[in-house]
Image 1 (cartoon, rainbow, N blue to C red):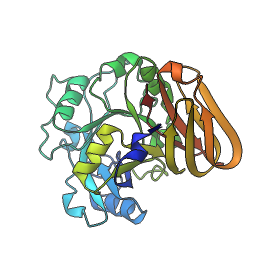
Image 2: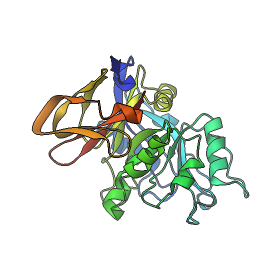
Image 3: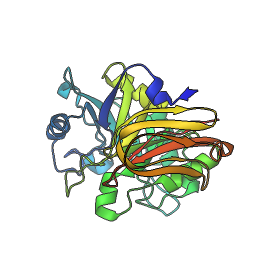
Length: 299
């Protein structure tokens, strides 16, 4: 039996948003007000990831003084440099940057900037790929990335381009062991907050432990549903969750098994069609269509 690492690890699940903007770049609220909003909404942590651009002074919002015994912050930024295959600025999420991370050099490319951030200790995610039509070629040029944003709330509510499972599963099909994260990308403009988050397993609610768990994939992502446990056996997977309308296990290409039933809280699904593809991941959807996603496990 293999228990999904996010559920087997020691510690407690901590709820956090790792993609957020403030008045340090183009957000509507000050860093203090952003942190207060997430703290008051019951989150355990937040990362302010303002746009790391010259016109904003290459900001890394220093939120360390806003930490408390029950709420913490992780320093980060959304990095930019020329240019994707469509000629757009790269958008790369870097969570866990040092406060003195150097500004982007004039000749620095997106992949080189992402590599420098990873080498500085950051968790790297491919930001909102569906929003700006990032290609497989683009994604493959970021081998240092730990995750893909499978859901970006702002991109969903404001452009209908928030879901990026297409890119994640193409990468998985090539054998790329990349995880999935759901985020707000909140600017506090037009209902773009509190819609996507990560549930990170860690013993302590401190930045170093949270970033380490993100890098190791010891978390799941959600828009609302709770996943309590995922246990893989030789020929089946058992999932326990909050009341759901669909529970599914997905594999390579079109490989999938599902149970559709109102109010499901525990389900066992076969793996005989999933295992030959080399990986599996679980998705739970509630009656409102909100989803939760586990990271893939591999054979």
